Length: 188
Image (cartoon, rainbow, N blue to C red; front, top):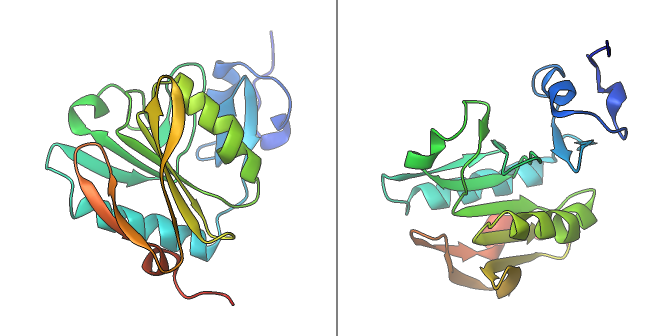
């Protein structure tokens, strides 16, 4: 009989889905390729951006859809915790209250400490899961990049920097994103 993990001492080692589920509530971790991936607590700017995007989207989404922040998405064997997720309420019942198992309209990741995970690893995983739209907000490089799934590849459809804004596709609506407002005051 294998002892079930009860702490985050499992970081970096392979574990089963059952072991992952037995971790303490809200470990701020994702389950990707059979491994526990732990992220540090997000910065104030990171949280500000996530909330700003959620408020913007809430104002344009039809009543059939919802926006949420940091809600787990399990599109198969992996489980991710996107910073912002837009989904159809009819598919929300495809999961439990703890995680969403349908396909969202949009996932947004805000880059922080491990940029490679969001830029390469998760991008490939999201494309393989059939995610139709993916945005990356990069506070360091002060950029927002929108991607759409085309022929199985998440392909850039818009790249916005400081001083720019545009209407971006959320799937069931468009939302005007102004990079200066979204990122807050420039650090320079």
